[in-house]
Image (cartoon, rainbow, N blue to C red; front, top):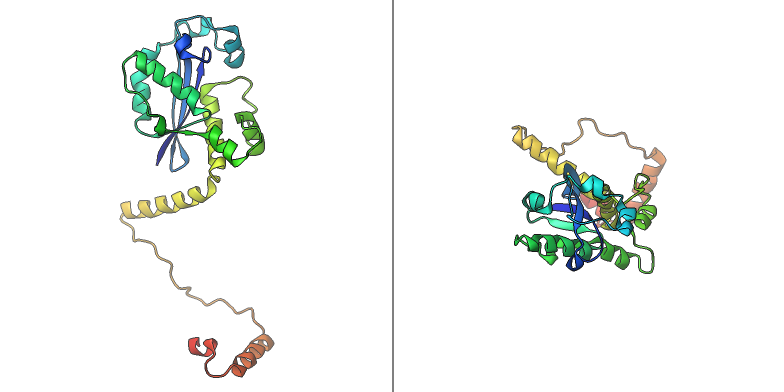
Length: 232
């Protein structure tokens, strides 16, 4: 199962009022494990950066002036995403902006049902508790010390860890994935399909002679129908 953990930074809150995306960061997961593939772009919004937005992410006009337009990276973004499930914190916000940008270019829209909202998951799992990314990092003891300002790629990497905790942690899938990978690699290498084998040397019993005698006396009292006698 392929998933893309995604985050955006913008000039404000409403694309219909002229706000634009200025950064996209995304991290690929396969069977809930990071693959190392990422997508990260800064984008020239073709408008001035409001002070309030600058204070959130620190991306100013001078920095963004020579960056590509959304039109320049849109197809590369869609090619990276494909039909993978999108894991987003407050998905309605990012999906609204992404589809607005794609719509202005008359390009393929991202279906709303393609997205999973980790904010909604957190609110359902921990009702009444803070559900911001920072709050969830504190809850799950995830290090977010590098997050002095919002940044799309860093936030995606942190959100990937939070997401795995929200759905139950990565360890069960990690063990399963490792076992499947090992089995698959053996078959691809031409090796035999592994099966458990009997021990060559039987383990030494830890039962004392007195305990064995007491057990036998107990079984004898149960008569010839005792299960231990049938199995013995």
